[in-house]
Length: 422
Image (cartoon, rainbow, N blue to C red):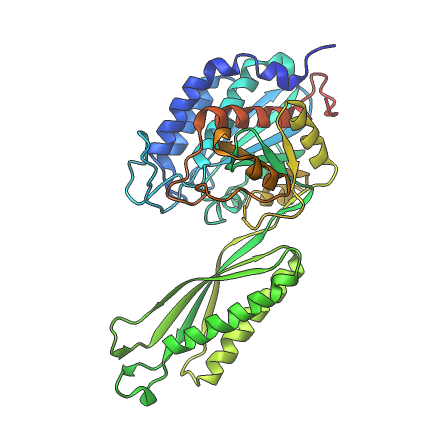
């Protein structure tokens, strides 16, 4: 019986891990924020061209890179990695820590890009092991929820082969090699809201002559938190957080304006619509109570759709990853984090599967931590994504991420070109 395609793809992979560690360290040391990933995109394009066989296009959706590798008749598989960093000051103490002040790869996108590069090199090196077409998408601006849409608006599905399936992954703060995913809704929809509350400024000695937007903002926050608490019985629960309140310049000055920044996370279209309507109703009713001189402004920005895995197809990917020896955990409920990966599959009208994989040294986890993971709860106590101290262990994380992509892609990239599960 011939070796499974994913096994053939892995031939020689370990020999190249030192190179990919160097690429990873370089990307980690030079993070770039959303839509300014120019250096990162250049590194990606250079490595893709060095693999041979890939048709590489830069500047898709601004700073995105797309590689296409055609290898006979068969399905088109889209593999996606994101590239942008976060406005976070790194505090890891690593020798290859960010050289960019106030910017860091705190979410592992440097891991994602490197893993996809490694998988692309393996695919190019073993054309006899598979048939079909691979579209490698290196996406900008995932952190603000706009990069996938920008690439689609720039003609991703018209300029490049339309996919039969979209596959993607994300590194997380759990044991290296472990994979977590689930059919159906995997990750929440998220909306950031900017609420501008207008008052009438004045002196602290005559508050009766002013309309105090600071007090109004406090009242709005308390009402919103009461709403959030009432959602706790939902499964999964709608989450609403007031992440910032900006107002005033001095203790004895009542300002004219206060600004709230809110984060809303929901797990269904209905819950999302209901929560957005409730937020607006609360804000406007409190403002009316305060007799504000101007109606509040409510702006929705940085919105992320639900990340939903296609039933049936997800199980095929789970089986393929499990066959590599990776421990695969099926989550009992969705994660509250968000992604814009699902936009690709929705736009293409094709199945979509996303999973999370561990990138942390297994020695850092206790038996109790691993038991929590079995129950779908991430172990506490270690720096997580978006922390200034988050740093995946590159050796196991990169190897696992490359193998995951190759194993999942192999479900469709059969040597006979049929597209059947191999």
